Structure formats: structure tokens, C-alpha cells
Image 1 (cartoon, rainbow, N blue to C red):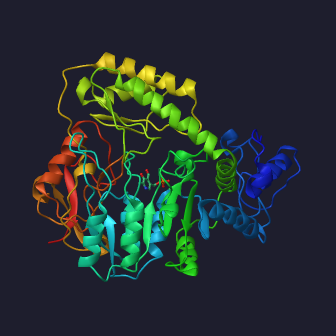
Image 2 (spheres, protein in one colour; image 1 turned 135 degrees about the horizontal axis):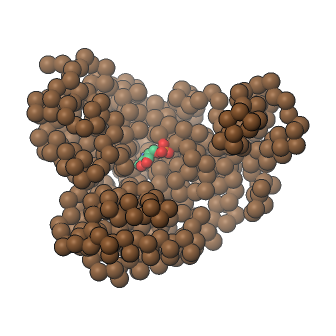
Length: 475
Ligand SMILES: Cc1ncc(COP(=O)(O)O)c(C=O)c1O
């Protein structure tokens, strides 16, 4: 139940193990939620291991104390002085951090390659985005980091901005100069906040970039369930409180978090923290070696390219297919049939997630199956067409919050060009809005969305995912 002996340094994990043992031994007749009462004869094993934080891991009156101890240990590990465990992913963390800065109507400097959760955070908080665009890799058109000079210029043009929000690493693992960004933000007297959803492992090995807090950021959110062996939805929100108010951070976090956090999720975050603290360097070393080996093997497949080199996170594997002529969706279908679903596949790109839980056998098997799938679907090399998520250049007409609440109507796609979008439309993955509420629906955005859909992308959050109609503000 605790194969690496982590419970001694993980109070929530220890409590979960104790509770589970008691439940298994039939020693519990709970007269509290959850309604399954630890029985599996009604809905089955799907509820196995489900334990509430309040009234499960500890009494309803005392669980906060236990949770605070686990969060204190995480804050110390990341060099923060405030930490909260979220059971609602980096989605919740981003929204909590948006609610923790500024006040409605204030500007924030934000990368337009943001995840939709942060865009909705801006709606909730009423913040007005000043968009900054990332640099782009000319060969692949994939996004690189936002340049520090871009953020400095935006801060100079918008002296009333209350924070800088960046996503680093990007969805494709590109990383930027967070130290420079922190300097730029701090010289302007505002906090730097980083969505590091994919990067919970960063900073735990000298060959990995430092994590955002170590680089000088004032707050970061990261999904423990993405890079670390945590339960789905587990995330950490971490902050240093010199430029952010601790009580406001707590209020913002609690405003949108459930009052019934799952104890198993929280305990798994605690277990990941204990694992990183003790074995992080060794596990990250294995991860870096595994990904380097995979990059080497895949680069030998004719036509395949992988992202690599400075500015690319060493644990990220991004496979570029255009030179093979194989379509990413066909390759993905073969991988799914082989029991190897990947995180993202579009026409020209396949992005598997390799984590601390992988080993030589899983990664070698994956690269072998991937190489065979590419051979099966090989065709004439083609020019890559970047996902509209990477190339979006917004034209904001009114702030997202104003548009979110404005009267709207449904129009046919042909009538939508030039109108103001009421909705958020994003190919998912990666979940970067191509259209955000308040933005002009340009002919370019329409064409790019249609092209992504016809190439097999899932179009998410649109009222009409077929893209035949759009929700626009009433004229
Ligand atoms: C950059 C980024 N931020 C935030 C999120 C949301 O994370 P979660 O799924 O943990 O809510 C994602 C999800 O893919 C993401 O890519």
C-alpha cells in the first residue's frame, strides 16, 4: 500500500492509509458523506479508495490542521511561503490566482497562448487582458516562450497593469527566461504568476530548468496529476507573499474550490511531494535519460523530427511528423489500438506524456509502436500546418467579462466574420482559445478552425462544435 515507505513524511497519505485499512477491516459505520459509505455492493469498485478529506482523513473539525501541515511541507519544498492543494486541477488554480490579483477593470499582462481556464479566470475576476504573444519556432511554427522584451514593452505601455501571467513551459515544452520576466515584473512593481501546469517535476534535477518559484515568480500553479504520479485533478498552487496578499490568496482559492475535497486526491499530492523531496533527483535523472533515448531513436526514423535543444524542457517529447507524410490522427488511432493513448495528436504532431512513472520498457515499447505506425501511414513529405492554437493573433473588441455577460445571438458561420464572439472556442487539446469572448471573429480564425476540424481536431466549448454557427454579441 505504501511501496516506497512515504507515509512517515506524508501526513495526508498516512491518514488515507489508516482510514482505508479501517474501512477494509469493517471498522467504520460512517454517518457522514460520501453516500457510498465505503460499500462496494451498490456501485462497485468505482468508489474504492474514495475518502473525504473532512470526516475521512481526519475529523471534520481537525482536517484543516492536517491539510495545513501537508501544504506547509509542499511550500517548503518549492521555496514558497503559501501553498494550497487543489482537487480541481490547474484549472481551479489559474482561476484562484486570477481572483487573487487586482480588481475588476484592471489590466493584466497575459500570454495569448493561455489555457482556457485562465481566460475564464479573467472573466471571473473582471481583469482586462493586455495580450503578449510568444515567439515562434520558424521551422515548426510551434510556440516558443514570450520574450522578456515583449513583456517589458507591455508593462511600459500599461503602467496600471496589476500582474504578469505567463504559461511556462508551453504545451509543447518550450521554456523561457523566467528570471528575466520576474525582474521585469518586479521592476514594474507587480507580481509574476506562472501557469506551470505541465511542470511539477521542474527544479528537481540540475539538468532541468528551475521551477517558476525558484526563478523568481511570485506564484505558480502546477498539476500534480500531469507530471507526477498523483490522482487525476490533483494540483498545487504555490506563492511567495511579498507581493501577494496571503489572506486574499486564501479567499480566492476557497471561492471556487469544492467544500468536499477528495481525500485520496489530496493524499496523492502529499505523497508526490514526499516522493519528490526524497527521490526526485534520481527519478528525474531516469526521466531525462528516457526522453533523451526516445528522442534519439525517433530522430533515426526517416522524416521524423523531435523538439530538442536549448529552450526545450528535457522531459518533453514532441514528435513532428510532416517529413514522414503520416497523418497524426492515423498514427494516434494505431497507438490507441495498441493501448498507448497519447496526450495530443494532430496532423503534424504527436505529443506523448512521459513521466516519473515510466521506465525503459514502457518508453522503448512506445517508440517502437510509434515508429511502426509511422511506417504504416507513411506518405509524401508535406509542409507542416500549425494548429490555430499556436498562431492565434487576437483582435479584442471588448474585455472578456463584458462579452461573457452581453446579450448574444446565433449566426451562421458565413455571417460570423467581423462579429464579436460571445463564446470561447478552442481545439482541445491544447485548450488554447482561438476565439475568446470579446474578440472579433476574423476570416483567418474561421478558416483555421475549420481546417483544424476537418483534419480531425476536437473543437471544444463552442455551442456548435460543427462550426456551422457561432454565438456572437447582439449587434
Ligand atoms: C497550460 C495549462 N494550464 C492549465 C491546464 C488545466 O489543468 P487541469 O487539467 O489540471 O485542470 C492545462 C490542461 O491541459 C494546461 O495545458
